Structures are given as structure tokens and as C-alpha cells.
Image (cartoon, rainbow, N blue to C red; front, side, top):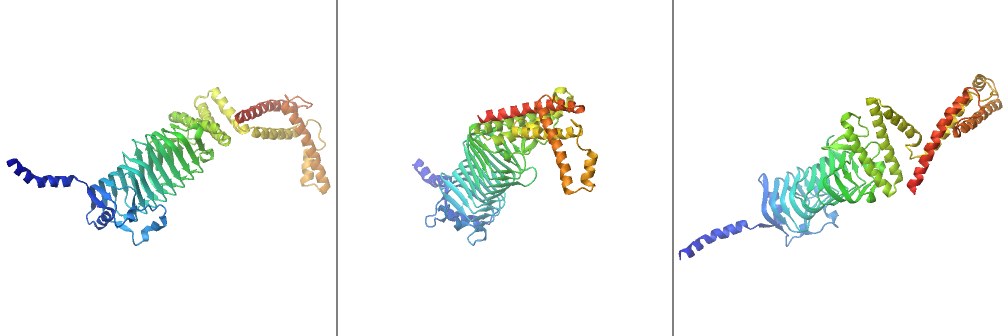
Length: 494
């Protein structure tokens, strides 16, 4: 009897405890009314389930094909403003949830949030920051949203992140250590201190028609840092701050298409898929490749060399070689040649620095030889330039042979100059004098060509014979350069 009475008296407490432990169920419409009418500093929702509204399904309609309904929400009468801070913890959201036309005036924190389907924020504005931490969802979508600050913490288990025509300002960080990360932006604007994305186990990063600028000179974007991506696509994006793609790899495909990089691009420790890389070199040229540490660029092709930067120099050379292998495999000869020339320019600078430091003759010889190859054939990748420079050399030596005649000239230089400038000659006489001078120069060019393609022996006299020998040595060297460059291009095409 005593036990029965104890059970009867303890039953209300047990029921109350059971009710307390059960999650609260709240409809979307009721939730929004509570947040809108909240007079406290912070609106807190813990251990709750957000469920669909039965009579009103506005918040559960797929508005992807009805975007016009929610465009321009910030001057619409149905825009709902939330004046207090918002904190959600241990909340489950029904699948395919759409939150439209909401303006959060204070900071918003979502922690331990779970939904089995899509969670779409449509035409929402977060004026004082949004933080997500330990969120699990199928697809998190920001469509026509504005975010003054954005932070994604650890343990984010979201299969897809999609941002369409939205504006973000502040910090943007997403780290997924448990699974792959699919992140997609289209027609979005980022004004950032930092934008960091990394995943341990693959996924896809795609940014299309996005505009990224920094709030200050220290702003940067960091993709990677750990793990790998399956796909990395940057298409028609503009980056006005430093971009870091470091210490990671792309397994399937890397695509950088018609992007503009106003600042540096760091790619050390980045493995690209040689068979599936489409990243034309013109996007990176003019010294954009660099080496970075902790978000700061420490060395690039335009940085002054020093003893402290020697390791960074070799790290940067590895980046060039990574891209060269990809260009060679994919047959992008134009990008290969341009990348190779810029890399050799950097190596030439290093040879000059070595010579200034140690004055070793092999450093001096390497420096001067590289300068010569850059001038006459772009380090052997441009046989057409070698041929063109040969013709210029032949023409210049032709003028030299006019100053040191091979045979007596039919005119005197002073008389020719006076007759063409001051003398009272008729038009026909001037043309005749010019024709005589041109004929002599062509004869001299003929002798110059003969000296250029042989060892310089000919019918010259006096000092001209020694000039011919020097031209012969130069011609032999140029012919070797032209032949090597031409054979290299033929073999590369084969």
C-alpha cells in the first residue's frame, strides 16, 4: 500500500520531467511571430523541432522557380524584421524549409542544427553577422541574401552549400573534417577579411561570376590547407585580394576559366591533376604566382632576392613545374611557353643575385647566357624570334660594312648627307643618290649574310675582315639556337 501511494504522489513529477525532456514543437509561422515580437535582448530556442504549418505552407514551398515572388524583399510590406539577437541550439528543422524575407538586425547563432533535406534562406538579410556551428543538412542555400558577417565553425556536416546572387561581408569560414564539402556560389559579392574553405575528404568547390574584394590589404582567400577536393572550378571570377590554394590536392578536375587576379596567387603544396587541368596561363602571368605563409604573401617573382628567401624561391619554382607538366599533358603550348619564360626569368634573376653574392664565374656565365637566350629566342621556345633576330643582325652588320667599306664607295658620306639635306638638287637627283646608297647597303647585306652563315671569310679588306669573323661566330651561335628551338618545337608537337 505504501509503495502504491508513493507511486501516485510521484507520478505528476515524473510526467513533468518527461514533458520537460521532450523537445518543443513549434511551427514556422509561430516561430517567426515569437522572434518578431520578442522584447528580450536575446531570443533563445533550445531542444525544439520546427515543423510545417498545416494551414499556411508559405514557408515550405519550393520557391526556386518563383524567385520573382521574393525579389527586392527589403522594401516590401511583408518583410519581417527581427530586432533581438537570435540563438538556436539543438534544433531540428523539417526538410525543404524556406525562410523568406527576414531581416535580422542583431547577430544570429545556429548551433547543433539538423535537417534531413534542404534549408533555403530566401531574400534574407543578416545585418550583424551569422554564425553556424555543428550543422547537419542536405543542402544549405542562400538565395538573394545579404550577410554583414559570416562564420562557419567546426563539425559542419552539410552536403551542399549554395549561394546565389547574395552579398557577404566580414569573415567567411567553412571547415568540414568529417566528410566532403560541396560549395557553390553564383553571381555573389564577397567583401571579406578572410574567406577560408577546406575539407578533409573531397567534395566540389565552384565559384562562378563572383566578385571578391578585401576590407583591407591583409584580406585573403584560402582554399585547402588540409585534405583534398574532387573538383575545383573558378569561372569568370574577380579576385581583388590574395588567393591561396595551398597544401591540398585536386583529384578529378581543376578549372580556372577567364578569372581576373588583381593580387597574388599562392599555390605551394598544391597538387593538380595533370590530365584534367584547364587553367590558361594568361590569368597568372606578370608575377602573380607567389608563396604565402599564414595568409601573407612572402615571395613572388617580383620580390627582391635574399638569403632568407632562397627556400621560398625553390618552392615557387616547384609551382611553375606543376603547371608546366599540366600544360604539356593537355597540349596547351601557348600557356606552356609563357609559363616557362616567366620561370626562366626568375631563374635568371637568381643567377644574377648569386653572381653578386659570390662572384663565381659559373654564375656569371649562367646569368649572361640566360640573358642572351631571352633576347634572341625566349629561352629556346620561340624559333621564329631567333630567325627574326638573325635578319636584324645581318642588316645591322650591313650598315657596319658601309662604315668600313669592303670596296671603294661611289660616293662620299659627307657629300651624300649635304646633297640630301642642304644641296640644291632636283627630286630625280635625290632619288638617284638614295638608290646608289641603298644599292651599296644591299651589297653590304649580301656580304653580311655570307659572313653570317659561314666562318666569316670573304673578299673583304682591312678592318671589315675582322668584323666578318666576329659575325661568323655570332651566326654560328644563332644558327645553333634556331635549330635547337625549331627541333624542340617539332618534338613537343609530336
